Structure formats: C-alpha cells, structure tokens
Image (cartoon, rainbow, N blue to C red; front, side, top):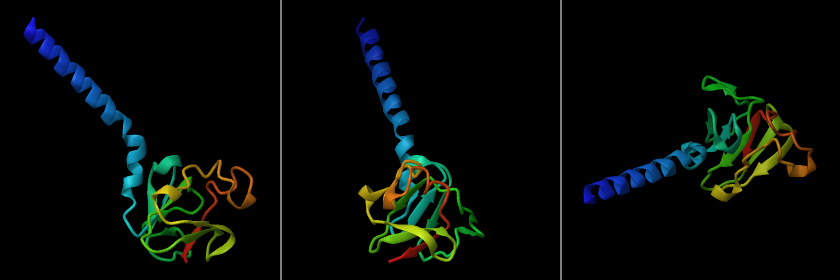
Length: 132
C-alpha cells in the first residue's frame, strides 16, 4: 500500500510539473529577444518568427528575411534607447515609440490604438525602425 501511495504521489507530481512546463511556451518566445535589440514578431504575444534589429533599419526586408508588413507584436529590449517604428520604409509615415524595457511590450498590435489610430492600423503595417 505504501509503495502505491508513493508511486501515486510521484505520478501526481510529474503530471503537475508537466502541466507547469506546458504553460510556459506562450511566454517563452519573448526570451528570444536579446538585450539591446528590438524584436518584431509575426504573431501576438511574441510568438512566431521574429526580426531582431540592434541598429537603425530603413527596411525590415533583407538577407535575414522578409518582415515588412507582417509584425503583430513588438518588444524593445534595448539597454539604452527607445525606438520609433514606422509604417513605411526609410523612417517615413505614421510612427510610434516603443519604449525600452520588459514592461513596455506591444503584445498585440491588432488591438493597439497607440497615437489615436484605430484598432488594426499598426498590425502587419510596419516597415522600418529608428533608435532615438
């Protein structure tokens, strides 16, 4: 009886640990933004493939991939500066500032109304960034 109880407790602990581990992937994608970078993700909440830029980028298309007009979430994990993101290449068109730090993430650009823009305006509509 004691062996069954211990085995049952061990199995219960394993199931609990597994469920805790299963809950983390939704937030795990944010960890792929290295310190000093702006990361722009295909999907909300930092999921999906991402563009990571440490410098001013007049276009998010390049040898690393094609990221113009596909961004649904942003994280400025910069260590010193805020960064402006723009709806057009070459730092032009409507823009807003992504403030540095972990609590300043734009988790779902579809619902983001930054700058008084309507919901959906920023989602899949960004093409360049300029560090301030």
